[in-house]
Image 1 (spheres, rainbow over the protein chains, first blue to last red):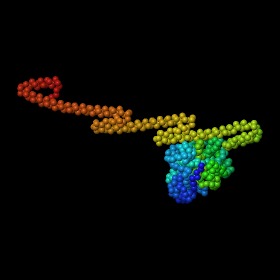
Image 2: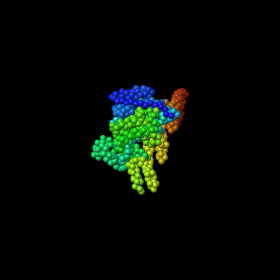
Image 3: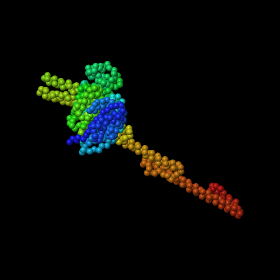
Image 4: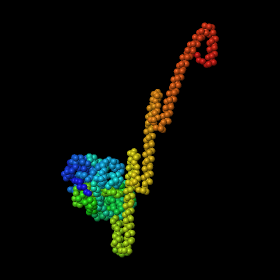
Length: 401
Length: 228
């Protein structure tokens, strides 16, 4: 039996006054519903004063529970923006939301989640709300993406989905929000008890361009050698011809860090994990032309079998659409109240102006209210999954009616 | 082998090497006599994919273990020794390591608890002994160490202090008694001296004073008696 008791509306605004922008976005969302709000989701550009933004939103929502984060681009079903605030309001009697926030994520991810779990008091009602899941949003600059996803999975013992905050590609500081609080090096979690299962799907649009390679030297999030050769040298070998053909750039001659960064955003690392690839976002070290090191936003392990991947604009657009299609096929469009999209900031770097097209394609498939943001990593971990952190990927979460 | 079959196999192997994880030989397209060989080839391809899956799963399992170890170390640094590895999340071949690690943490916790208790017992004992000794130094010998207040290992010292108090008290009492006796004896001696002088006066009156004095001197010499 499907319960049609959830309403999901969105709003998006931009301007100079943080409080007013938050208020305007929330007002837009509120104008589409009359019900009591059970949860508000706020994605705010790093341009704004976060405390003022959430204050503005909470004034409109009568202090309804709130979660959110800083972002690198925001979108709703209406439009895609930079330097804006996107707000989604959820009113539901078929979903219950329980929130918590905790800091200290970098030092001890597992301990951070365990403490957070103790903070979230959840009144379970298995008869009426048999489905459990958790939406988590984390600081985007911990360089411990996989550890965070694994810690969340180990602690919550449920399906988890979400992503990492962004900061408009400044890579300086990211924040997560809960109610009136905003914290860095922190995680905010929303445990959800629902009558229907929260369906989510993850998809990336990368294909391999190298043979199977082996990481031979790595430490924490820094990759030194592949097949006992300097990492960047190996990377160049497999992508330089394609880069030259695509945009005329000679990787052997360039000394621009920006050129390398842009290249690595397109030619990412794929960990071969059985019959799928898990994508990792490579970043050049500041001295890449001398030390050949490549950094990642999560730990990289020696011995891992990898391939260098490539993503075309077409594949990026297609993959996001496919993630939503696959999710919708499981419950039917008519049962979807709204969609939350966690998208990678790199996707918009790859897609540039076509990012609007990617969001439009999602919108065309779903044709329901949606909210999303571009961040520094995505999380999707279903029961039985051993890994949950992704890059340059779209995670689509369907909130059922 | 027919060229068509060779091409199919070559194409699939090429795709597989390039990372197409779905690449598989469609047995239906292969002629009968090579079907068996192609099934084996498919198994080899599947095996390689399984190997990468298994390796990745192992990596994820290790991550779980390292996360727990990291968490345990962090808690120890914060002074919390009550945490343990979740043995259920550790693969069979590493369970012993987890159990041993838990034993190490357990022993460490117990040792530190013992150290903390010893420290606390010592503090209490020093405080109790200090109070009693300070009273004694001020001349108050009515105090004693309450043995219920201190731990067993310091009871002997407590008992010794109590014995010492009793002993000092007894010595003082003895001294006081001797002093009293001496006072008494002083009084008796003075009375005896006064009385002797009276007897000598009477003896002089009777004309035997010199004789009596001589007898008394002899007696004094014999008994080393000091005259007053």
